[in-house]
Image (cartoon, helix red, strand yellow):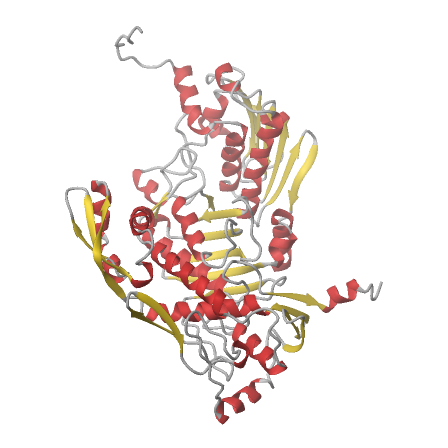
Length: 624
């Protein structure tokens, strides 16, 4: 094959340079809509109208009631590298607007037939200019137009057929536009936005002036089930703030299609942030499912670099580990709080089907102890390389059955002091979120009555979570327990992986791992956590290093141990068809209220559901 001949360096023709520059921001019709929407929002618009024809290929019109553009600056607005949003290099370190790489009008105009009409708020008349590719702009002419700006983009890529042929069908292109507009609607509840496709209104949301309107707007965009099963978040730590909504683990998706994160109002797709939320839901979400959330992070502008990607979807944080840890802890605290327990400035997760609020500054949350909340403090010891799990007294009555063993040693003792009994009687005088037991169905479900109506509990699933959380708590206290390996494990790694291991050696030592170099690209493991002695340690080490490279921490060891404890808890919890007394059922309800993540079992399935009086009335057509 002939080799390419070296070419002399030469300046590109202006029209070709314009088209290359346009490629940075105009990938498809949705890219045009994004740039124009950002300009409208930056202008202070409170009302935006978006009209699309044939997926945006034929026409895109974005109108707003913002501040508008002065007549004297109209031609400058369509010039390359002209912007009102930054003036000095220092401004790039603290960008507070959505757009800043120029107003993007020059790039859009170079690949379309563009008409720009604007009336500045302090001027009596509006002015209009037109362009038709390659920077051919007319002189501004006066026209009738209300305050604000309208950008009319027609025949996208008419002069670049190579780019145009890569466009998808109109339906597909509009789907991308609709998803983009939905994100903008979520990010700016203070702005009225209407989206029309081929003269048909597809989405129209009104600005939310109060909490009720905000919830109604969220229902329009995310659906009623999401709102009903989500928690409103409000968390702060130093200069960083998190707000928004996170769905309870029982509301989950097969895809990541309901995950939205905004940083200082900007739409982002950030791997670190997504990973932080994923870790927050770890251990409570059903296997293979994905959480749903709409989250807003507010961080000082100087601590966020938004000048990373031409489309501005990616950001870089001055301290990514700090942001990651704050986001993970905040969401984790919200989705795992015990039912009905509040601590600090926070309220606990509400019952399934009822929205709740979780907020605070990470004050410790310690549930009140009652007669039914003592129990099953698991201890771990090693005997002849075999892990044996036992239970200390006292054990709740509902968890006991003569002759039954928990794992290999499940011993129960039925001894409660008079003080505990008095405390239990006192507790029954108070109202609890899960109410009080009324009956048991086929030894599987517990029926309870609370203020809202009927609570239905899967007693095995609920007790499984209780046992599991207590085993995790005990393991956390003893997590330094590790055992030396009679035959060390040699793991082959790349030099970069070994460097990461060395960088985080102290953290890995705390997890129970000890290793030493064994050749230029090998590690020799001499000690591992006791529970992981029989696991595929080499594979785990590779995954841990990958986590450390992304987030600066790894939770794989904890996840692996939790899998083992989860299996043990499943075998050690009260079985189905076990008939309980009313006191035993109430004991289980009280333990659920004091246990983290008690709304889901270890496998992510719901442990209880709430049926309100309205729902019960509807079942029997009462009042209809």
